[in-house]
Length: 356
Image (cartoon, rainbow, N blue to C red; front, top):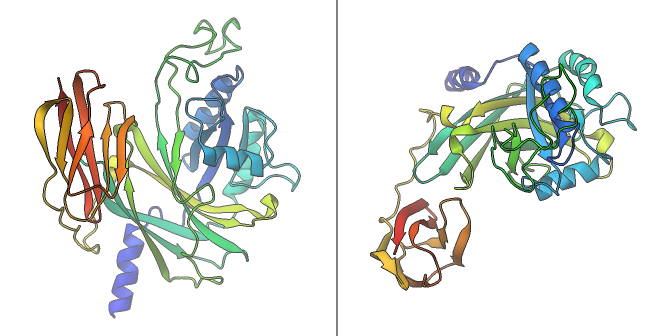
């Protein structure tokens, strides 16, 4: 009886039980003049097909590039931008990446494939400490194809708006009358880069060891993540994109996304079935505040690392396993507000510091 109740509770928490969602991974660059048109194509498809989930990998030459995205691009041998891969499958083993005009046909094909697995997300995000606690539950509806299964969690930001190198968007359509990008500039300053992959938890290919070699249908498989969200990101625009995939180290053609879900970061709510969050240790203490020259910090017990960050998220000081009382030289920093952050075994503590 208890097992039946637990199964029903988990089913209720799963998003869209029985629904197949499709993942479009787009390879893009701020220096690609054709890419903003590819963005428009992807957005139009997402508006037409609610089953579509978008994530954009940026080139390593962009300010938004990631090593994981470069690894993803090299593994699938993408020759350039704008190209997209849908559910990490292609019409043939030698044709994985498609141009924007080919995405819809492939999308419709993937929408007809089995959902295989349903994914539920529960947890809590503390916007003050920027600490994310996430529980992922996966239940297989039908036996998946044979192979190594990975759980994947991506953090995406929508929209990233900056001006400068690596953000200004090249635009080949600036002089094409009638085009939506006509007259916006070449490049477009303060371009809203959407669906930007900010991080991929546990590396480019996700988390291993969550699923057995042959998972059973109807059995909940769960994994927990504790993750510090970067201060450099606009957390109000963050989403979590979660999917289960097949992974083959030697053959990209044997990799495949089985099903996907996404949720805005601030939509996460604690689940009654989850244990209560651990109590935070004693509050972070520092003196003097405002400070000049030197700052002394009293670190709580079990502090893993201590850091001082600028308001835009840049690390100005960082030390692993600090002393109980740590001295930070701040003589060279300009006056203003900063963030002091301590990562402990029980949570993340932060404090605003004024330097004068």
